[in-house]
Length: 267
Image (cartoon, rainbow, N blue to C red; front, top):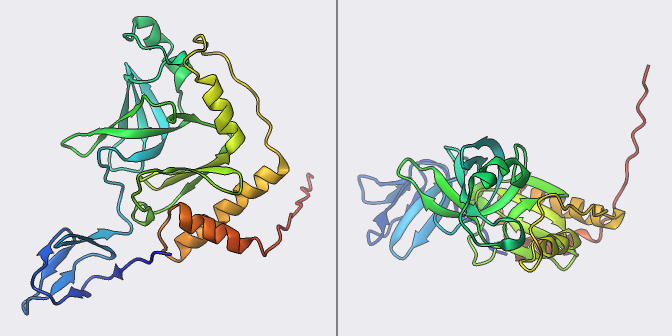
């Protein structure tokens, strides 16, 4: 399992003068490279930088994010992605029901709340980073879109490992989306399969079609166990990716699930 090189302000990162100084570092009087913030050391070739542990998410093009719709505006949605500014999801950057490809009309603008409304959780990809640091998102792929019937966990973005794939079907039967912005979504694999059926491009567009999918007790316990495993990794400041989560889940199988029943006394 990969471990992180954590440093505090004033810690010496390296005494080799051949490295270049990046964000969060500075050169001391004797030529040593020293950390100026508390965070994780990152090395890219000869460039060394420190990514703060408690900083907001700084997006890059191609990042997979999980966000929450906070406002519906004209031809766009405002999305909370744990960045310094709210992200933007344009009406032209989403998949229409049924996967039809056409220009967005005034009727589509009137039906925006039937696609996404305030409080909805979505998965998306960063399409563009503006000069002020705000992000433009898109959900044009069928793997992106509205998330439902699952569990959301907030973790430090610096602990999320950048991988080629952030959508994982775990061996335990659950689906995990590890957003680069620190939002992790856990749901049942059966729910994701039903969503793919509803978004089949061969189907006729129907924005009102919703299928009620029941989640069994075993699936709820699996989701809860995965959530606790991720929180345990975060408590130890370990990197989050599919392998680390799977190893932690396998190690937790030796512990039984205890159900606590709480009786409310209404007087």
